[in-house]
Length: 276
Ligand SMILES: C[S@@+](CC[C@H](N)C(=O)[O-])C[C@H]1O[C@@H](n2cnc3c(N)ncnc32)[C@H](O)[C@@H]1O
Image 1: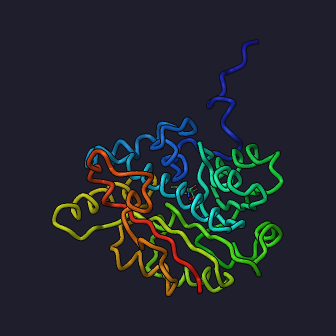
Image 2: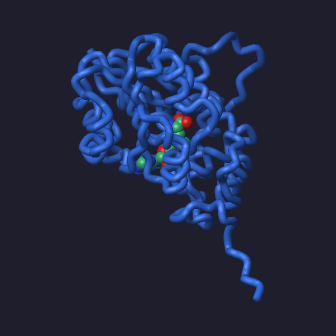
């Protein structure tokens, strides 16, 4: 007797809800990935109605992450705690830093079932890279996580990434949250953050506010565009690495911008701070 067709393709990992948008899958869709569903693409469609270039937010963020990885690996950092890793794509953190220093250790942390399943599959044969499940907005949970503690040596400098993540934190106590992480890092460590930005200018503030409105009222439910001062406060009293907190595209760009940046690229800032 013929069997009824399954509700979803068999490639959908157990535990993945394809009826609710997920931050990781919306981001994957913006980067032209294939691990996303209609409900995720619909979030982008809603934001695209006010910001046609919305995918550029994701690209600016991702390219910043890759340049930060290269910079820190070349600076001698060999331990990375990447909070909110996202779905595997081209040039993941461990691939970039282990190309520079094969002995580098990377721990990814995420709480999205798709990310955990795909991450575990990708990392099965890499003994220096692990993925841990925890809520990245609960620093004490992350810092006490067994995998994080086993893999990383908190007596030596490490790099902590909160890249493309904190705008999904809707609370007002982001600086305190980040201070918990910063306090746990040894001297010489680095913290990298990229965050949606309200430029507070007549030209771009309205664009930021409209995108925020769409993201927050979409099935994804998050995406705050904070001001420069609010984003800077997330670094506490870390010493900012040149050029400081700037548009992601301007943080040690790979070359001159040959064409004008799209408007939305003014709406995401990135920076790297160093603990003295
Ligand atoms: C936009 S992606 C950024 C991925 C990557 N950091 C990058 O910059 O390319 C945000 C990631 O953070 C994860 N995330 C969001 N909130 C989280 C939470 N409370 N705990 C753990 N992970 C979370 C999502 O699942 C997603 O994978």
